[in-house]
Length: 91
Image (tube, rainbow, N blue to C red; front, top):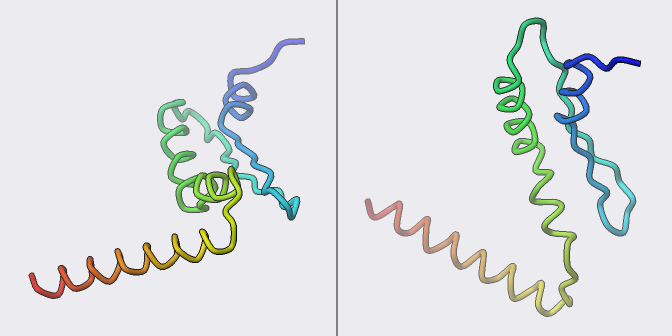
């Protein structure tokens, strides 16, 4: 049984992540277009993964935060965004 390069690339250029707790399957997949190089397909795949926030979701579920710690992190991020907004308005 011979596997074509397109099938190999399709297998390489697909990622799935299982979200902790809810069991939700997130899948980013691209199809190789006729005559498309692997570099271009990989670039499209990376862009798709970024837009679907798969990496962010995996990192968020990679460890547990206690509710109080989660609240502190959320407040710290809000303060950081507020400082950035003020800085942009001054320029």
